[in-house]
Figure 1 (cartoon, rainbow, N blue to C red):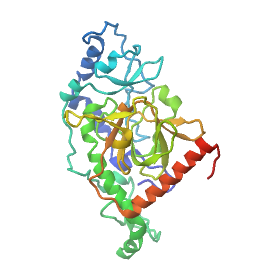
Figure 2: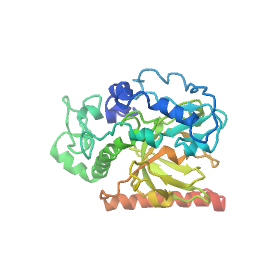
Figure 3: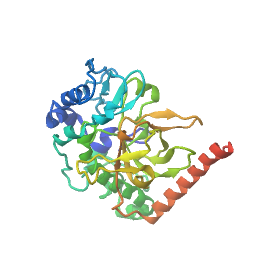
Figure 4: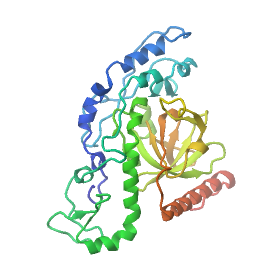
Length: 357
């Protein structure tokens, strides 16, 4: 991973995405966007509209991958048409921003059916090598801090930390086991992202996301066309008087509040199987320790002054069910305590009008 004091880069966790960025269009076909644009303007019962083309996104939307950030810039799909109810009937799900147009998240069902099914080539888990996690060999022991002149041996399970000998690894196991377990769950969640590529416009390939909340743009950058996909873990629901609110965390341990502003209040999981494509409430489908892939996520400044994630359209969310994996009791207990404190704090702010740290 990155050195002390330096924020981890995208390729530190996933490796370089340049090849996949360049080959993503050829592997999935070049005509899907043309079919969607045609269906949006010539659907049955829909009045004809003039095709004005897509509005250009922020500068550099079609440029080469940004090596300084470690991931390719993602273009923003926009349609310069007014909002009307026919868009839902045509299968084009998008977030209405007012004025600038739509930000489309999901593909139409008939378009998704014709795309190539992507599966993880490594099986149930994404296999990581030492080069995927660290750009430089690690020479510092994670337990005792001893600096070695040669690269140290890594933890076989997570490949994220190194030790100078087996004794240091045994002494560090109590504090490291939870972090090591989180890395193993992350590999499983990453493998379950592959089927989602065919359903989302903004997901160019199965590694087109980050695991750090710090990589998200601000709301002003988002409105200007910036976009970022982020993979986070759901910790639990917290108090809000009239909206669904929950606490999420990234791989680096940073937590953020996520509030859903979608008036529907229900989630439809994208699937080609009619039996699995059912509409459920958020309370029923969002469970603690599940992973969420948020398309086009950004930082929003809420009314209480605390920044968080605002979800305007639930079609930009992909829920990764992790219920089949066991969770350590210590991790579950710690998660419940954090969520309980955050919920109490939110209730004090909303109901009592006071703030207590």
